[in-house]
Image (cartoon, rainbow, N blue to C red; front, side, top):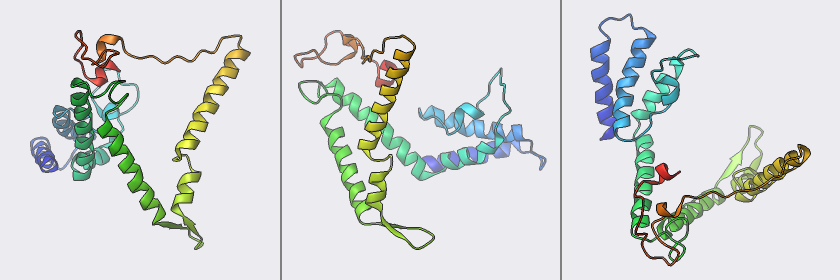
Length: 213
């Protein structure tokens, strides 16, 4: 439904703006702007929005070459499915936090449902990697699982990269005569839905997760 609606918005915008065959790039951007405004109404940020949106003090020229790709995504059913699924998951987490199912006593950090969904995603990905192979232009065959495990997609490698970066920053701080301190910053207690004992927070600030961040 959404891709069809966006296609109708695009057709209407083209009919209103393109009176002649001599179409200027700025007119094309205004067409994109109409479709992007409809996307923003659904609380979804359009692709390349920051680069293409109207700005008063624009220093760089408008990258008009990004418009076709941005429009293609806003008219793509798969793109909308991923965006709506992400919104659904965020909304579901907000609900579970509101009923105190995300806490130290229940499920810390994220809900149990989110943990199970992530594990199922990893299981399906692992099955896919194990059942496929990669063949290069010379005909050499490699197991996809081995390639993935050797790349930065491996969580262990990402952790090692992060620790190496932290250690490097610590060494730079010591060379400068500074003191390297690692901070973990969280929201004040009024933003947490539960108390330490797992009971509801009476003075809860009812804002969403993005506002808290």
